[in-house]
Image 1 (tube, one colour):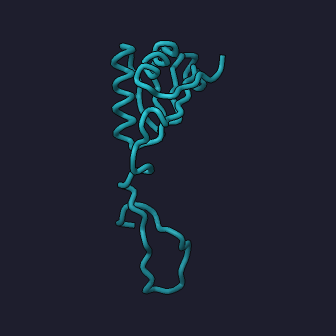
Image 2: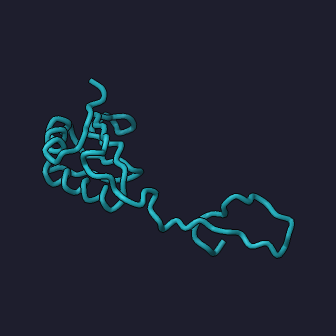
Length: 116
């Protein structure tokens, strides 16, 4: 397969002249980002599969990947910690739940704490 993406709809065809239609993977899953007032973010402390190290995990963002990365960058900068943005989630190294919660409230995001 020299084209990007994967074939859509058709699994197998006996027609040798059949041309598969491919999905375009360059387009984002969400074409536009919801404003902060309409976002329903969830924040939790997670240490699963991290050798006991704690991370603050923010999920539920609806929008483009670039906007998610920009939010993650701002949170990492304000917390003074490392982290990453992948699979639609923001991971901040360390227990910064209260600080992130207050930062996101100030920027008008709807946020909910999950877990203890």
